[in-house]
Image (cartoon, rainbow, N blue to C red; front, side, top):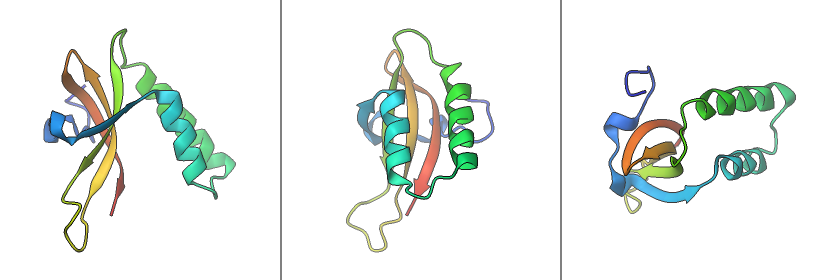
Length: 98
């Protein structure tokens, strides 16, 4: 997966991983955080989830990641979702930036 356009995995390391979570939990939190999610946005989220579900294998785990200093002003952080397989980040996407 690391050859995919937009794959952030080559730029991340294990120290960037902050929390293991299920894909279902990730989707639920995304929907809860976006009060204004309309039907089109929800459809795009569902299509995104369906596409990344196909890359996961048995034993893989989903993690949130954050990169950038928390105590810097401005924060200049970014984060997203990563797929970890056998201890290595095999795919990642950025979903937010501050």
